[in-house]
Image (cartoon, rainbow, N blue to C red; front, top):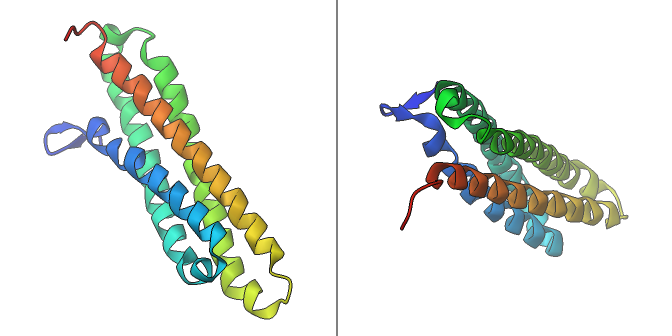
Length: 154
């Protein structure tokens, strides 16, 4: 789907990962620091990460269609933005996989094991991937805004 409500879908969709990925990164860091919360809330993090990763991929695909439609006027300006968007989609997917693995470990491994160090290590790694994903989403959004507003004087 390249349109939503009669307008190009890409500018509408990109706001979801740009807002949610930093929030989910913060949530992952908090859950890494609070194991009691993590055991109860890691499934919510995994579910939100799944939805955000799916929307990020959708935004990337709609952006590719928009770029193809605008190619004559954009030239090569959108290439860096598209590259960053692809990387953000990959990182968002990796973040979801890590969050899902963490939720599974918290559900099935932690209650049966006296060694609770590995889930905390994994939670920290998921938090770091979340931060990287948030940084890439912000970089991607900044590059897209730069392309959109190039030549406009305020």
